[in-house]
Length: 450
Image 1 (tube, one colour):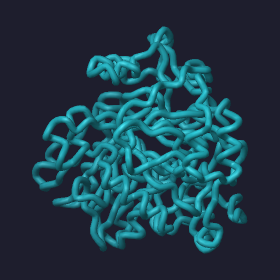
Image 2 (spheres, helix red, strand yellow):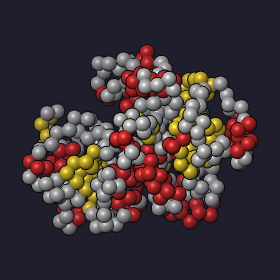
Image 3 (cartoon, helix red, strand yellow):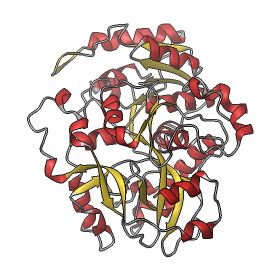
Image 4 (cartoon, helix red, strand yellow):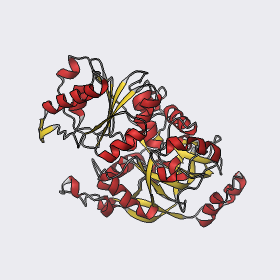
């Protein structure tokens, strides 16, 4: 692994040189274990600590199959699906691996007693399988997390509708929180030249998700002049949604949970910010009874900020805690676009405010390859900026996941894999220098990097 790291850090770009590098028989990876998948049974949700379930193991290097690529991972990041994997909710991910393993002999490699997690990466291609012509060893890449087979007709208009659609590193094995990762070659995209390894790694999943959810015709199809309510606007997903609203001529109303996160949203360019904790919003009387009065109070708070406008679009991802309020506050004929449900999957809302006010609920899930590519292209052009706030080393991943679990983070949380330190990997220092004023709200201590 040292020779691979040295080749990357030394600036080697010759495909033949990378193809000649020996691929190790094993590599370090962050895993959960099948024989521990019941370790949190019976515990309250808050007591399920990912630091107890996550391991840094030495695992066998998988063989590269047709249409696949083996990537040396310089950096990765933590997404909420890693939290779910680590606390074995809503189900242990080994059920996904078993189901995938039954699909074919090639897929059987994924059905293992350990699961290598992680749905983001930046790195360098080491090997490509038969039939791959768009990528070659030495290419600097990022990866999106959509794994599809496309052997059925349903996915050929929108690959997210493929019956065999899966999320790499969550519903498949050999994810990105590791020194090596195995991906389908059509997951790869060019690494933006002005970013560091850790910055490039943090955008793939959440940036693509926000693009589909807000911008795409498969999501809310946002237009200029729309008012967009964004929950968790300073977090991983919400920070990208805020940028898309601002860059697309919409008006974001950003909901955050602390004065520090409110200030971060303002530094990013948002003018209308609600600190839900400071306002004391409580959308439930108890576990079973929503607090409709609080829905109304939120709606009035939004109108006070916007000059009387209700949201055209509500960008939903907390789920159970907020969904009833989201349906209520959307304008007549408005759209609630939802994914993730990080506070719970069983939503409760008053259907009168949906049905009688002609509102729409749209479910979105990650993005298809075209949407992911377009989202990455906007990052490469500097229109959308990485929202990385903190970076850990690979052996600290459990702490990183614990922080995301507790919502003790802002923006995205990165993980250095083969990269020995932050700030490496930039190839276009001039472009970076021009873009630093817009990068710095999320990561001011990297503002002097060239």
